[in-house]
Image 1 (cartoon, rainbow, N blue to C red):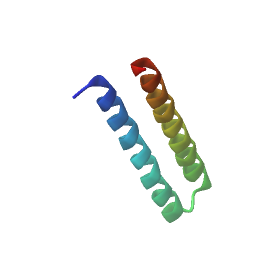
Image 2: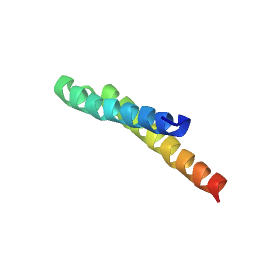
Image 3: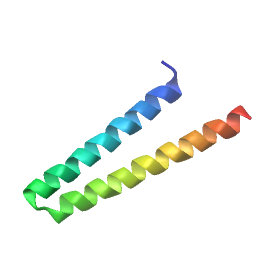
Image 4: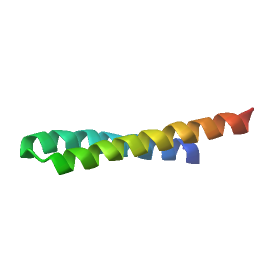
Amino acid sequence: MKKENVLFLLLAVITVICIMSIGVAVAERSIVIALLALIGIVIALFLGISLRKKLNEASE
């Protein structure tokens, strides 16, 4: 597996864990956990999009 694919897989796993954390936050009725999970999702998605853009620019 290429290095880029491993990074995308890692970001996808982190995003899924954060989405699962939202379910835990709802069950625990914790706003703090939900906010941290949402921040984690936004950061992981931002990193994934910027990495994809960087790889597309490098291949052109």
